[in-house]
Length: 158
Image (cartoon, rainbow, N blue to C red; front, side, top):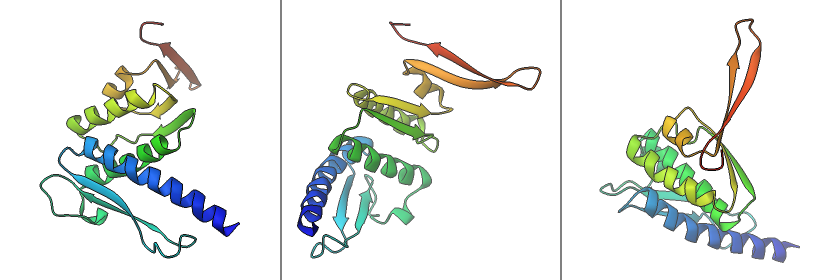
């Protein structure tokens, strides 16, 4: 059993590591990111460290990155996992809340790629994210204090 767990974990780690490098470079042009095993000699107990170096910075520790950089690095890890082990759908809750316009644009491009093979459910307040959606769902409160769900189909097939 341990050998199977080690093999499956190693394969998943290698696939995710390769995707993380690609996704990180797209979200941080000129930057470098990688995943590192904390104890590669023991695949059953090893941890995983995330190293991130945005362009023009010498920082590798996540704690030294800005809030937006940490958020984008976390999204890069999520997307790497999504690409390494695809699923029919993903749910993300305000993953782009801390991003500036430039980084939001890069993330939206990746969202558009992911939705080619999976359904994305993204909870957001960002207008730019909503603009690329196929459908919007919201909750509003009527005058009598009762919440109502509203929906709107968008795009060519609306």
